[in-house]
Image (cartoon, rainbow, N blue to C red):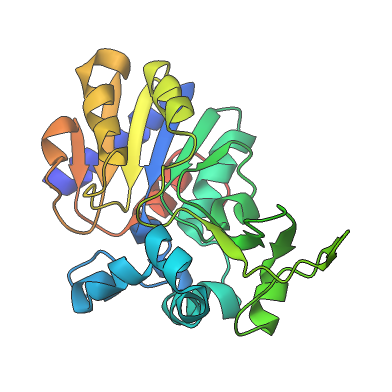
Length: 256
């Protein structure tokens, strides 16, 4: 009964809000077949050393070893035919219905953009591109897939560049992207909604506190497991994202 009441409160909050900021984590993409790296059974829990290997310092020290490990960790996102799910389409449909939606995503899978959301802050970058750290030439994921260790093939005055590429993903040790824009959006939102994030990563996990301090009229979270930040939310739902948002979509007569 409590869960049903909370879902109804969230539906009403979404209906009333004009400006909505949505923070999404790995949990929104599990329905698309992408593992949740930070769940209790996630890959980071299984092998913490991979965090070190996915760092900027490791890439600089050993770029040719970095790429096989990177591809192994992100194999599903690089090689799989992953598609947006109900959660991604729900947010795009809200925007289509006239809501001002800002999606702040920790994910690098590009699924919010693929679903049709128009204002997406990919604060951890995207798996869909790579670039040359020397000359800046950009490459799409299909080029990365074709080469075990992708190198730049740009023609320079002195010949072919040949520099090992860098993924357009924020690695451990990098600064996140677009964080100022995210906080600015939170300062002007009616509803702050978190979907599928453990809220363990800083500085992104400062957003709920900023929203709860008075910037947002309402705060809500849907996450399968409890988080250390649940205290900052008016509505807390420990349930599945896809089925919950599908119910809310029907409740609000939104097609997803």
